Amino acid sequence: MDKNFILLAAKYYDSVDFSAFQKELERGLIIKKSIKKYYKTGYLNIRLTLNHVIILYNYFNVFGTNILFQVIPPEHWSLLVTILKFLDRLPDKIPNTQIKTSTIKINEKIEQELLKI
Image (cartoon, rainbow, N blue to C red; front, side, top):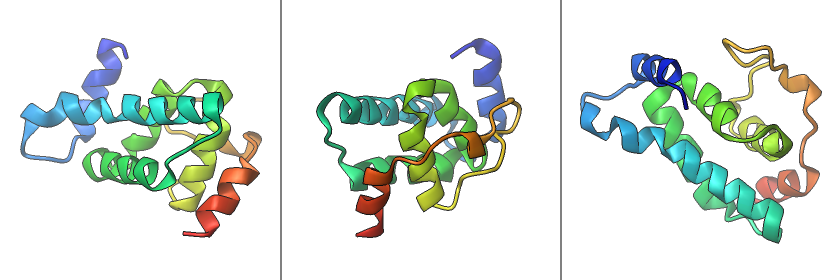
């Protein structure tokens, strides 16, 4: 992540404990690792991934979407969009970008798993 992006994330950081900022920002990388593992192995710990996404949004609110789309590569956005749609956090367009989520296909296998929760 570049310096400008980190400064923008700091603007949206919603906590009085700023010492934990870097740790919470790195939560995006934990989610990336989980999604990457799914594409390698076919296994996704859905509840753990959902928990990480929810915590990210608790700290960064709407900017959590930008963080996720910044750290997760485009080839894995299908899974990300599916999770965000399930959590009702999927905007039509990612703020401060040209990304339109309606052009990204939903991962139907994960969508079915999410509906079981």
